Length: 64
Image: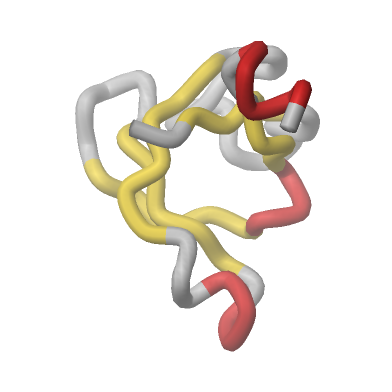
């Protein structure tokens, strides 16, 4: 499971919190649309602008 950290929640406070960690559902559309799909703080799948998030990596992924 890939995770992302919210680095800009402005205007989306009902769905995400600043510095919150969220499960990434689908990031393939990001290249085309600029949006990623995550599970928000309410447990709903939602598409939000990708620039508002930073990918989170496991330690072994960072070392590679």
